Amino acid sequence: MLKPALNEIQKLAKDTHIENKKYFDKLKKRVPKNLDYVMQDLHDAEFKKTDCLDCANCCKTTGPLFTDADVERISKHLKQKPQQFINQFLRVDEDNDYVLKSVPCTFLDNENKCFIYDVRPKACREFPHTDRKKFNQITDLTLLNVAICPAAFNIVEKMKLKMPL
Image 1 (cartoon, one colour):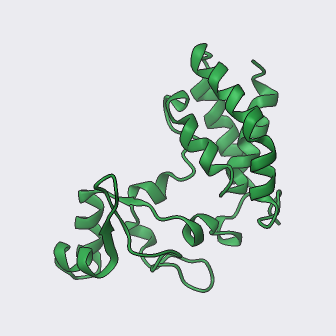
Image 2 (cartoon, rainbow, N blue to C red):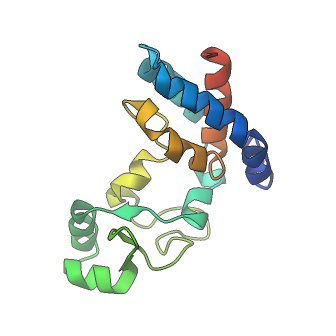
């Protein structure tokens, strides 16, 4: 079972948003030398007890960016030409990036499994990005992700306890 529950995550994220924003602002000003190691440990510990198939909220509520490499890899897997894949599944957003035409993700089945899991976009492979190097550079993205991903929410809460600023 997910803690926090999926139906509570947006409210909890909203309730902690100001506190988290202040925390991340301080973090950016004075980045702890061991930040990436701590984040990797917190990420690994959380995902040892988190099964994304229980949730898949990221796939249901947001769409990843598709890089050119993603388009090439996925279209090859689907035995399509890249332009066919783009025309069928993607659109160009306001930042001129390829994104899904709609959410929930077209490739998500009714058991929260991904039809293209082995070749999924880089953004999906790396979500929720809590183990990324130079974590201090993606705190704005993390603020968004805690409202989507219970695991990201838990990681940030544990981070604030483990690394008080």
